[in-house]
Length: 171
Image (cartoon, rainbow, N blue to C red; front, side):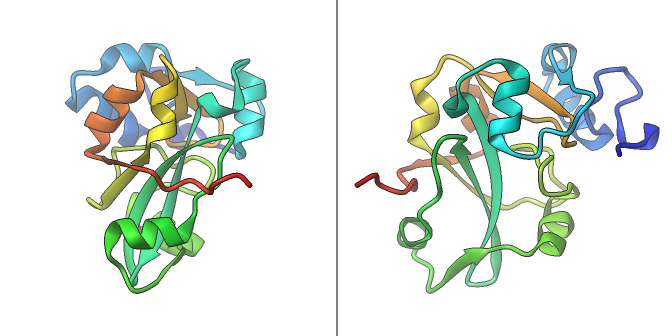
């Protein structure tokens, strides 16, 4: 369960580190539009159901290890990341899913609540082009209980992401 210390004192419900990142970027309006849910929305499907949007309008923030260096991949909720395509995009020898402790150490957030920016450390970021298919996407606001809406191009810009095609191809 999220404790009071884990949420923004301004009332948005966003994680304090993420709330501070939004303020630092002049995105206070996004804080005001953050939604908090009584139940955790740790999966994209749970988040889409809670928000009332399409699964593909959820932006997953996933940490991978590319040659043991953390990299953030932003992916639409209806798709899966193709690690081989990530490897090719980065020119890495090996790409694997990062362990939970690496995710927390790198971002400052737990899996299920990782936002697309406002992390403890700066990492390389790839954003799958599929996110651009929508006017608005919803991403975690630092906790498994909170999400915020953002235009995909703004998401890419604020995350410092490189657009790439890294989702699994459907047969």
